[in-house]
Image 1 (cartoon, rainbow, N blue to C red):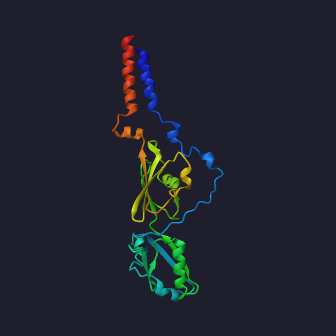
Image 2: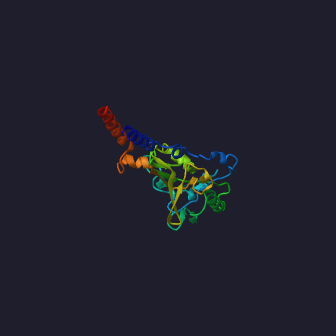
Image 3: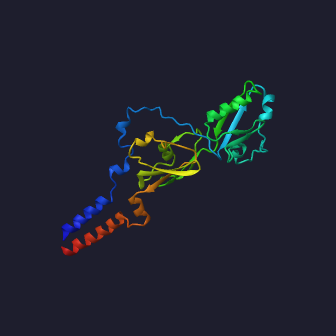
Amino acid sequence: MRYPLLLAFSFLLLVSCATKKEIVYFQDMQGLTNQDGSLSFEPIIENNDVLHISISSLSREALEPFRRKTGLEGNIGNSNPTLQGYLVNSEGNINFPVLGNIKASGKTREGLKNELKSQLSEFITDVVVDVRIMNFKVTVLGEVNNPGVYSISDEQVTLPQAIGLAGDLSEDGKRENVMVIRQKDGKQEVTRIDLTKTDFFSSPFYYLKQNDVVYVEPSLKGVKKSGFIPDVPALLSLFTVVLTSVILITR
């Protein structure tokens, strides 16, 4: 009687343990060593983005007509600085003082900066323009240690970096099936990334875009912990008690 019980005990012990292939990231990293590292990313401005646009010149008087009046100047108690930015409307435009509607959606920051500088140079010879996306953020949900919404100040973040901001995947996170949800041309685009491999380093989802959502599914172990499936460690403990009792009784 003892041998079947010991065999069952050994089986439960094995299935309750995670394997190296389920936990380790980038398991084929040796194949990435000599690859070209020139992959770069520049965010594209989209509808509903909020832009911070600053202009400067040696002539403060020349700048004055182009300064946007929001009614919030000097309001130290204002807790929402995005209200002072330029909202890209549903038609993809911003309304810039004197210049009127300027197409912003679909352009890079550099592209919009050059467009504004070209038009402003007709009025201000030494104008300097800077454009930033104020609402660049990504959301990380699921089996990570610190899920939440993260603002990215330099407007560039990779998928591994976003997961790092969220405190890394928990032990119960499914590393080979991480979901990235992205809005493109008004539609939701979903892809699944295998973090145990490095092939996604050259994919369009290596760099995250503003408003991307990353979702980490629970592994089978995580599902068991949630109570949907009986927890193997709990069953293992119960089995150990029963096995010990049976051995003592049959002696």
